Image (cartoon, rainbow, N blue to C red; front, top):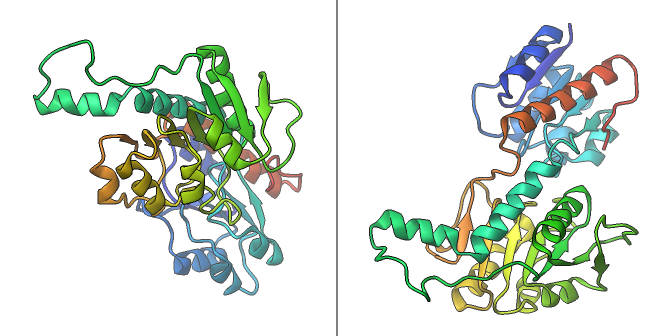
Length: 318
């Protein structure tokens, strides 16, 4: 029976399947693996099932000349915590779990769009504080998103799912920026020539790009300056896609109206300056937090493991 390290506990249906098919070791923590742990795992197990934040860096992988581990069956669509080139150089296959996360992540994007535009987080805090004095005609006026323009940065599976919800659900016009040309966004949409063009055109900007060296601080001070003063920014991708210091400055100065964040640059650390702002909605990385979704993700990782050890092509090799 192959030895498998599971980085952090998955849903019980997935754990039951894994325990039935592999000699499973489950780390007794919810914290990510360090580089030392990652190196040890590559030497001690036939397979590792890692997830967000596990430090499978080039350095951690490079320490191991002949790894026992031959597959990293990542739990999650994002794999920027894994140096794929270093893993490949050591003969390690890397897989992920796309598709299963698409709708759930798009739903969180819509949650943040609505909460930010309609000031729902601020309103809930007002009620809880005991300082709400009742309804009146100009109380906490927000932005109605029906018929507005959404700008989507990254028109992959998740970007397209967000576009469908915005267009069909709220009658929003869709513009987008993508590194490559997108022939069919799934809805009437216009691919603009530059990131700045999308930032300037949109009432709501949603970030749906993968985390990578290329997308690090993609949204910097210049990108934020291009946005309209009434516009909102939503991030459901990776925290370091935004220069957090530049975002804080833009929010504090009123350069943009608000932001809705599910991810953070130094997650789980959230700067006090962000927490102090009323025009920000802050969620604890809820993107795929649904029982069915997490189970489906886990079963995709199981299928990747099964295929690999059966000598078949893995369904989701990255």
